[in-house]
Image 1 (cartoon, one colour):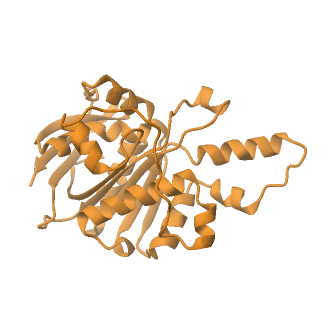
Image 2 (cartoon, rainbow, N blue to C red; image 1 turned 90 degrees about the horizontal axis):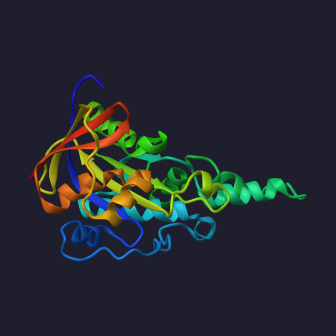
Length: 266
């Protein structure tokens, strides 16, 4: 990345353990209410047709929830938004079920298990649910996946001048995979990024390369979430947005390269 990338944030979606939506997360990040740890609660994917609704995994429910919340916050038409889906892995529970099946005597994999196993499954369900025909990118960069998704989405906004929805998300794995990849629960962040300021803009965001250490959170429980779930590397950025504060923060990316993020509230 040779220069800074700039866009305007128009909508936010959020879901994480103990934080079921952006208004709740905003209140906690502002210090207006205490964080209460609890398992993530996933809304039913009512926007999907009945057949796909029955097959929807935890990851699909998660991405539909945060994407639709961000779009609603921005007053955007979900069918017209370009999208970037970014995750450090795929569907942990589905991966576990496939491994169990392949380790047994009956190794016949169901078509549903198979098509839910691919990394772009959530993006596919999003297209079915919303009818979106705009460009869609699906990427993965392990623990740097939020930063990679943010750069990809900003690049599309800057180059194509198209409003873009970033959905960064992660899924937990059951044991024994959990011992090797201890993501504790599902969580996701949605950001609607626009190429120019509008009456709905919340803040201007500018991202450039940096080498500083990522900014931790003072609340120990929230900091645990930030470090345990890759998508939640976004929390220092979201804290700035919740407080309506301007300034520069540093987010984890691919060490030694980090992301310097400048926020200017509108």
